[in-house]
Image (tube, helix red, strand yellow):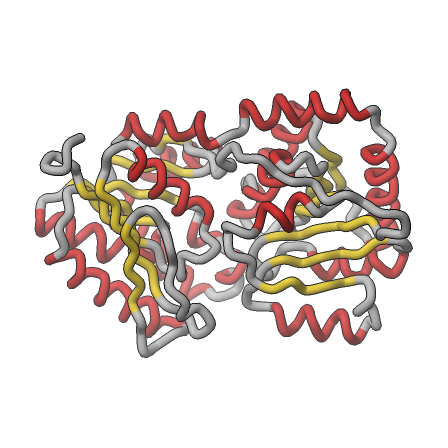
Length: 368
């Protein structure tokens, strides 16, 4: 497209943009294929540093940072911004940005695209909060049947929303862009590195992994990320006196994450069955591990099961008691560290080739 004919896509998400790989990949793909992109997020209390991207970004600085008042003020601020910003297409990420996007698009007669990263009312953080959950369900009940262009991360979620609202969501998985990963050279005496990367929230199996570490020698469990229960997990490690075996790496910008991922000997992706959102999830960390040549130990849920069995990129666990989990980790480390190098590389070559953003991007661009 020439500069005069470039269509402008205004993308909005409710986070601070620093670690959101999915939104960055979408924005980059559109930018690289002739669209004028503006990505909108918000400033959080520890992320005032500017975000440097090839496309334009804007982050709102809001007075309220938490609870219902935050979501209300963010959507009001976003709505009035979208009413006047130059735009041809609005791209709303998740239900918490949809109200502002839908009504701005309706008033301005602009195209609206919706990306469901997950089943929002099924988030574990909403389990037991019936009134709050009802609010999000009512928003989806009101707006989802009116969506013309939408996509999500896996087929089960698309099928559920089709059954509920009659909409045909496309499937665009949250897989990595193909890029080189530099593996860490292990030296004599180095401990095996177990790695969890992602949000540190309820239902991620972190307590079980921490408990399992007391049965594991010559290993360290690194946790890369931030979230609602960080302080709780730090205290849990201190109470268990496992500070020498469990390390918190903090929030890692997406540009630096591949180095951390490639440093691992085994990736960890454990989940609790806290609703359909987790049960049908397909965490992007599994694909990140595969691209880095790192096998994964994961909970045996349907979508995860399909990927791990089809591509043989890791091990599934059903018994996640601390002793059983430790046993599974030992067996996985033994299997993968002694595997013939050519065989191991062939496994990950296929996964990298087929489970990559370059393939998902084709469906994204076709929609836009």
